[in-house]
Amino acid sequence: MSTTQAGTTQTGTATSLLRFATAGSVDDGKSTLVGRLLHDSKSVLADQLEAVEHASRRRGQEAPDLALLTDGLRAEREQGITIDVAYRYFATARRRFILADTPGHVQYTRNMVTGASTAELAVVLVDARNGVVEQTRRHAAVAALLRVPHVVLAVNKMDLVEYAEPVFAAIAEEFTAYAASLGVKDVVAVPISALAGDNVVEPSAHMDWYGGPTLLEHLETVPVGTDPSAEPARFPVQYVIRPQSEEFHDYRGYAGQLASGVLRVGDAVTVLPSGHTSTVAAIDALGVATEIAWAPQSVTVRLADDIDISRGDLIAAGPLPVPTKDVQATVCHLNERPLHVGAKVLLKHTTRTVRALVKEISYRIDIDSLEQRSGAEGLNVNDIGHVVLRTAEPLALDDYTDNRRTGSFVLIDPSDGTTLTAGMAGEAFDTVSTTDASQEEDWV
Image: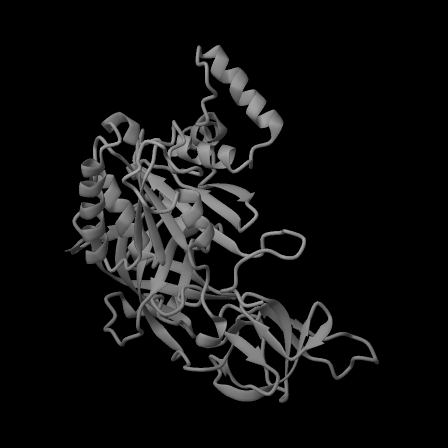
């Protein structure tokens, strides 16, 4: 089944999967919204609901406070426990969901980057009383930067503005115009009251002027994924299989997960970064031979020619990226330790890890105004900027705008393996080194 197909199987099991992230300013009601979504979609276990009802009664509340379904994890994050993003899994009859609940504080920009990096949709929450605020624009900018295909503006607390259509219309117009300036093409605005349940799962009886879908209905019907046949094939090699037995002495397979596109037996492919060419001789999926594989299947690929291939190589077809040692990228720094020019790091791209040197920090992006601040000596935690890297070995990076899987990478501290920075590659280009030549030779 193609990843663009949605629906249910004959047994009623949801077949399509939507990964989405939620983001909102503090006190906009995001915890209540997530709790309402889980509760009204019947995705809360009985003992969980009983615990929430008991805690609510202790606080003197008659109705269960659905925010308590997520507040525990949020409190842990604020206490410094290492939980970057709280993931929730739930399903309806029409679709399965992975929800990345990201914090709303400004200092947790890195957490939204983590949660939205694999999301196909972002729900940006605003308080109807406050409208579009600085943090709203920040969340929209991060979603645009990460090329999240779909954005939902959830205008919450409509019950506190008397369910007024003009209030919703003004907020929706302002946000849509700002998102369009960032290059976000698909924005859907939904007026909701997470506390009362209006337009979250069930249609609201208080907003008959709104003719659009409820939040859950939109989540169930928004197009998911892309057509793999329309993308170039990218197969990062994770493991080389060479069985040590007489029966399979000629077997040489390359195992991994197809990052994008489709591979068929007989396809001409190129191995990067070496540039050697061959054809697909066989494809094994779960030990069974098949004629075709499509992203994101995990398979074993066998080639017609005996080529020197190891973990980290990329088997590719279609338009090919040009392997390069000079990489420019937009990055979000995730670690408390700053990233400086001259820093020696490890760069992990798909299954390949190479040494790299930070040659230049071209500028830092002011995420509120989207202005480029040049002259930055380093990037601090949550900073987003543009860097130039020099790698010890060539990398076959796609442009992130074309392929999120093979256009992304992370920078790692070589001393302790800590993840430092998330990167989104741009086009490779030649630059003049801004670091000491002897330092570069020593590392890369």
